[in-house]
Length: 386
Image (cartoon, rainbow, N blue to C red; front, side):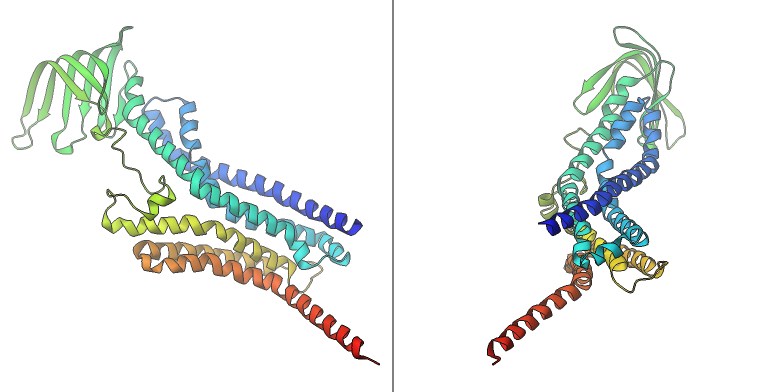
């Protein structure tokens, strides 16, 4: 009973350190990646005159994808660091002297790696696709609907690429005065529209502006002359390429696993292997967490003990993980070109984990098996002894 409690306390002691470090390192690295990647959307928000809250809401939808990417790496880093510290403080030596085997010492890290693997599957199969879908919908909303209703007086507002709107003033009843619109969405037919007044309306494909008493100016591409057309009433579509929300085609990052395995009709035949390869990636990438964790444990728990430590084994572990990451990227690219190579994706995910776990736990299991066999022979010999 005392031994069981002692083992449980040691397990909890190591696991608490691992879990706390994993949460801290994952959050820190995710925040760093979010900071660098979110800068890409500053221009989108600033150009459309949106608030900082909208910027945070938009970029926060990318956070689950960052966590899914860094979780295997941070698991490796945390296990390597915590066990290296335990070894440096001679705590592993004391635990071994108390009768702890390598498997018992590795057990908290393996439990943590298993939980991280399950979290990776939850992220890859449900959370990340849903967050990407929300991100794409929100970004489309900004480009096609929200921005059009945030026009500011006396400010040139870029509604979408190639479409800029200026209004002199806005009445309390919503009437726009002094409207200038530069429409360069069609590079071959760039036009400038002037109108005395107008009003924003919600059309079938997004926001539209009803223009009154204005003119439309366009340079004739053949003659180079200015064509001028006056009108009493005109409606101009302000949506991005006139696409409605229903017409926005999803990409493979935001669809379910079933959709990836059975690509819809709008996916070109040449792109279908990429969708199937993405499904395989979602199913295999969390398994790399187990491989990385086993490699970290191998570098710390095996080999000869050195009083002042050694950099050789940690560097070898880091090198092995770097090689596995490079192989994963290369194999994924090959499988995206030809689905006949999908077996390599599964092999790259499973084989390193099996080999690393075998090298870590195999010797102890083999010694235990030999001990049991020797014990049976000894008992049999004692039974026949005179």
